[in-house]
Length: 65
Image 1 (cartoon, rainbow, N blue to C red):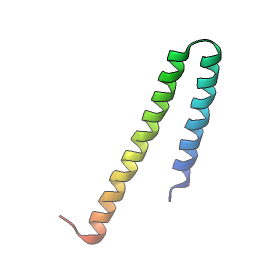
Image 2: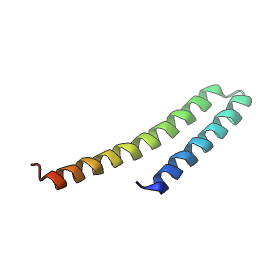
Image 3: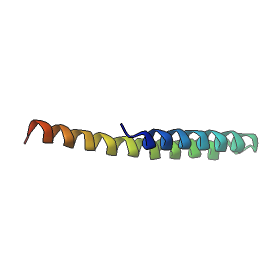
């Protein structure tokens, strides 16, 4: 498994949580939620790309299609 992807996801999670807390303390709760949503979207795109590569690998292994 790609260990660097796990570290990237953890890093994004830490950064998003720090930004969320800082923005919430500043009274900008709507921006804090948008920051959280943006971080979630970035990680979701990485996971979808990883799943796409997994499905391609499964197709190659079993000679599907």
